[in-house]
Image (cartoon, rainbow, N blue to C red; front, side, top):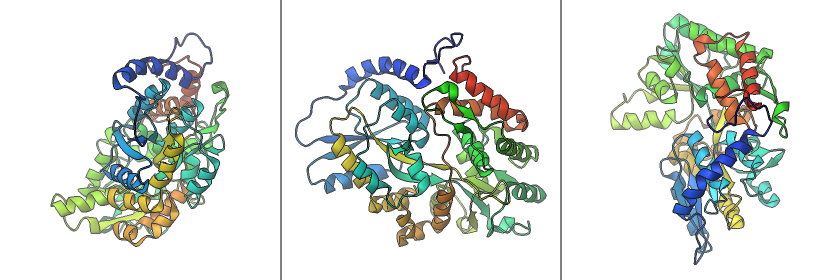
Length: 444
């Protein structure tokens, strides 16, 4: 990371504080040009910084503007496509006290960093009670830090095990029951086919490792030591992490990950699955509307979506339920917003059951509210909705820490390529790297 101080000086200033100091300088000029927090007249206009989607957040902003009855309006501003770039832009602007950021769509792993740096306006206690009622627990956990809600759960994502019904026939797999990674690897190898997983050096690799470690009953971070990076304790040398490394290595060595495993992400995986090159795939629910839209356009065989099957994320141990990945988006209110009360009122409208249902059906992003999964429109559009809900109930967030960027980048560096994993040593090496980075003795 280019903004780290001299790694030869082992002072223990927090990495996020160093990032903010650099970010403030970078953002100051930008705010001067963009007139950050310029004066306004008439009813307040709230700006909602959104991640790219298919237009759903803009439509929800329109709906909530209408529902506000003239007391405020909501305009959207689009962030970059990649979550790391979204984080960077928001941190830079907030570090310069940008009052134009009223609401922001945040990737859950970065929420502790934003909260620790005091970039988020406090969530009113009464609103916290309302916006978490009936919300799946993994989403509440992902929206919280230091034991309190710091953002508002919006939509929640998770990965499923997808399979081609016609192609798994005869493999001996009973996918109506929980299955293990070992069973899936063995069946795919015997079939001479592929099992599509994300092996590229990117956030997806951290997602995979975290789900495996959590499914074995462990954790990448066992003590987040929120007040001192020197106290962070890691579970990467523990038996669950060793088991996780073994699965990643065995899948790779079996040759079933495909010829491009080391560069394969979600989109590459679904392409191989659609072609029938892979009979199994770990991926997010977006693969379902993608298949149906492609079939309707004639770019995918009309029979292919009907061949899709789905099941819960695989177990690592037969006696332990899996801990699938948790993702999605939560809503933060900027600490320097002129209208935090109205911004939080708007988040309550944005995350209503009606708007989460709309967003699920029309944009394919699963809801955080459990009641949405019983809506007939949702069940028609996503027949696997009950499995998605169960997956979210079991899901484990990625490590919650103000130093998430350092942790994830270290994991990606040491576990990539998966062919180089040594189950007995890679976890310990990664833990050592993370400690060195947090102590400013190593650069990423």
